[in-house]
Amino acid sequence: MGEFQEKILLVDDERNIREIYASLLADQGYFTAGAASASEALARIGEERFDIVFVDHFLGSDRGLDLIPAMAARDPRLSFVMFTANGNTDLAVEALKRGASDYITKPFTVAELLKSIDYVKRKRALDEERRSLEDTLRRTVEQKTEELSTIHLSVLSTLAQTVEKKDQGTYGHSRRVAHYAMLIAAAIDLPESERNTLRDAAMLHDIGKIGITDLVIGKKGPLTSAERDLIRSHPQKGFEILRPIKQFERFLPVVLHHHEHYDGSGYPYGLAGENIPLLARIVTIADAYDAMVSNRPYRSGGSHERALEELTAYAGKQFDPRIVEVFTVADSRYRHMFNLSGSAFQL
Ligand SMILES: [Fe+2]
Image (tube, rainbow, N blue to C red; front, side, top):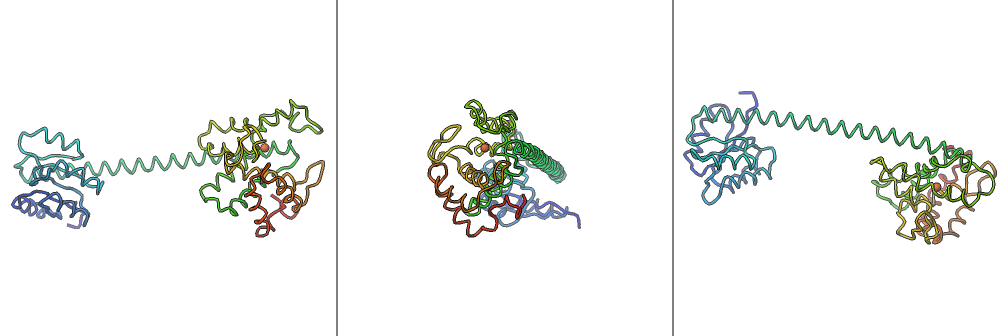
């Protein structure tokens, strides 16, 4: 033999029939087993792996038609062939509908039985090929989608960084905000699945500034109220930039809400407390911290201690007080990672 042969289960309540066909198939090199009832058949497929099941419709009080879907539910790789009485086409059609690959009319010759097995084998091979093609296709699409969104992401973060340069003269603000946000994520035990979203959303949080004229973004000196309104439109603009890209949907809450205040006095919606998405509350704090410690063209950055005092002073007003507390506590654990804008840590 050597060659792989399908394992066949014969389900028929007539012992003679099972034995005759089992020995005929054994002569052809097939491994066969018999089951006299539906429950025995279900037990057999639970014990060992079969490829093809021949099922008689009348199995004492059970019906082969019902057995097919029950067996398929337990082992989706099984193929079925229904034994039908001569002339009972309705039963044959119903069996095919319920998942049988073929039917064979009793009484049948060995040649007919072998032909049916061949047919089922070819069908199984085709199904297998189709499944593997579908698999490859699905994986390729997933991979390309992932590649595309990585490209999008890097283009967008480059843009965001370029805008920062015009805005505050500080390259790297978004990257540092992402870094601080990840420290907070570690300290509050943010689920792993949300950390990538947080990091990338933090990178993109100010992307909406792309949509605001340089004259206003880079303006030195006091802003008019119209100019201030324009600047305050950047969360909404960022939201609109990212919204069309399906993979970026998960960044929208941070982009849209990173200027909300815990007491409801922020913008654009005046959301308060837990109504502000958690990731946005984290980025708000990381953003404020970096703004306080970073050097600007017109002033040098404040100290780490001063920034923490400031965050604490505005806890419950601008910031989520629990996150501020964590940030302050995390300070002792992560101290060496803070205050990254100085020469000690170039991001
Ligand atoms: Fe912002």
